[in-house]
Amino acid sequence: MNTPVSVQDKKTFIQWFLKNYQLKKRESVWILNYILNHNQILKNIHFVRHVKFCPRGIVITSQCSTEVPFRFYKNHLVTTDAEKSFHDIRLNQDEALYIQLNFKKANQNPYYASVMEENPYVPEDYFITNKDKVLAKRILERTLFESKKKRLLADIDKALDELDQEQFMKLSEELNKLEKNFGNQPKLQKQ
Image 1 (tube, helix red, strand yellow):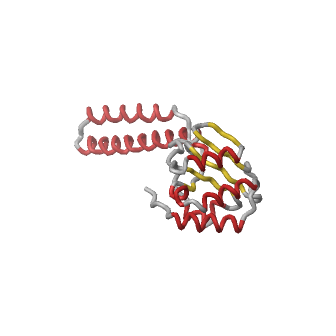
Image 2: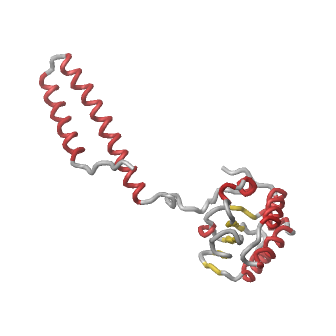
Image 3: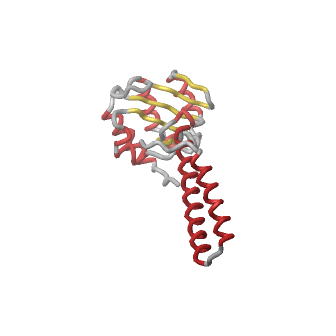
């Protein structure tokens, strides 16, 4: 769980950001200055990544970034009209507003990291590709195979120690079946 970021920390960060970066859209400066001067709005501001998943969010981009200059998201509607977003911010000061700032090396910036919060709206599997899922499945299957094989080999050794031929034959057959079934699966590719 995230520790809440104080209003003062958010204010200090926005001031620092405005002082150090030129924004692609001048209206973005107006919006950030408006937010700076309204503590009620600042209480409800959350700096996050992947704001497109949030119910209400803004993407603001500096000149040093190749990302889109400005986006405002509200309930799956998207606009590039900064005036509409400004109007929405003014009218809905008590609603959570998520902000994504795009600037050079943002992910490595300690000031940004200090106010950054985890985005609760990013889908759980957003960062997992199909290739990752296939690889994870194969690793799990391999692990289960190795575990079953190890158990069977231990049981076979025990049957040999006890001179239990019937148990030895049964377990050997089970081991052969396991190895044959696993051998028919696609192999893991080394990266």
